[in-house]
Image (cartoon, rainbow, N blue to C red; front, side):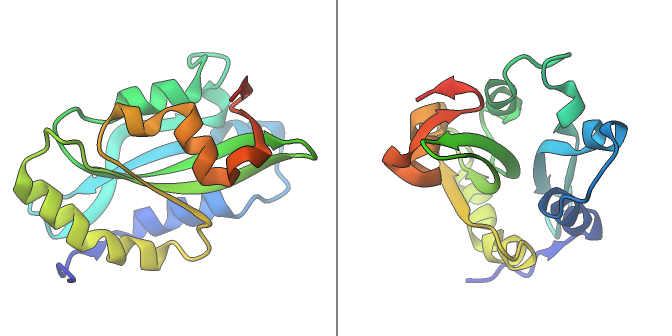
Length: 165
């Protein structure tokens, strides 16, 4: 069921910037987004970037020691959100970085919020062409390293964000 919710151009631009990794200078790499959280506009008609809810690659190791833990803590306890997370992980053969789309719908969120986010998910996913990994999380227990490693490749994953799984 579609909700009629639109996706802001900023959301699409951020997705494109995160997806397409151009040859960049070290300064440009630091400004690349590691994680971004999206929410519905106050009138509930548009999916927008939630102000101040992002982690830049340059923040990792400087102001953010554990980007994944910091990302999970940025999610609201009692409301829904969408997010993009640029996951860094290792298999036995190689290191990889891949985007993951996350729908956050905690158990404590109001039913109306859960319904509009669920019915608007297709609108944002259509704009995010080429996403390989998706996760729906209903609480912090769904966003632990082991669960995310399972979504990224199961038993092939040996480390996620530099930590063994």
